[in-house]
Length: 427
Image (cartoon, rainbow, N blue to C red):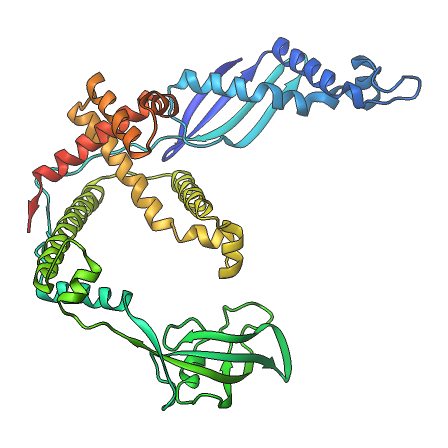
């Protein structure tokens, strides 16, 4: 098994020619026969007792060639790629088998996608906007309003019609062409008017009606709705049982003590919120500034990224999303059915993020190489300890799960980011 030739045929694409000796191929043919022998049956032979020679005589000499090629392909191709020193980022494609026989072995050509060449542009002394970090009075008031709403209560009212913002407890049943449809009925359902949880136009038509009033709501299902109902007109028979309005607590010292046992007055609560908001805005500003600088780095960089690398990253992001949903007890496929999306449609939502992440990784790798950034044993040990604390695991277990190479990569990439950001200027 050997590499016969290797030629660049396009950007990030090489064509390699690989040979497999007749001896190696014959051995693979024998393995393929042994794998299939128990299923072979020819008149005059008991099942599983057909010899290799007889099988080849009856079915043709090449009867085991396809399976034999599958046996020799991975090892022979990998050995050839190792000879080239190419960094491959996807499976070989456009396979062309020119020769395959017991006497001549195998000669095959294929194309491989290689790691892109990266030409760094400017990555130091870049400039980006740095967002405001100080909390404003408006920020504090907005936080207080949010706390008010979280501590509010629903109070029944019976002297007026329902209004947007109220919660109406309703019965409803939907009909299309006079026929009730599955999933279109509910009883004593608490609907917050204006929440957008029902079909567009539904909640607005509930507003204006009083308790015990029976009325119709006329809507059209969106085109992207469940296929059997998409685009159809529907009538919902409705009745209101109860109307509730959200009552907010008064913003005073008692409220402050109720929501935070570390303060005594509303002024103290505002001061604490001001500090917390400033801390959040400072962290957010750092992240936004860093992201802007990294955007500039990849804009300055020259690299043609293979589509397969972006596709691989999209798959990773989808898998990560599915894992996080699973931790919440939600199955991704069930979730997508609810959204009316296919996996491919869902995956496309990650296209921009995947492309950016791949480009950032390429840029950081190039900067690490350019700046000769390294990680020592002490730093690797410290990184393992941080992960252990983060995931509440033993340090040795982290070392088992996360290879030293990955720990090293995390460290040098962080050094590269720090180098870029520390040299950057705030606009």
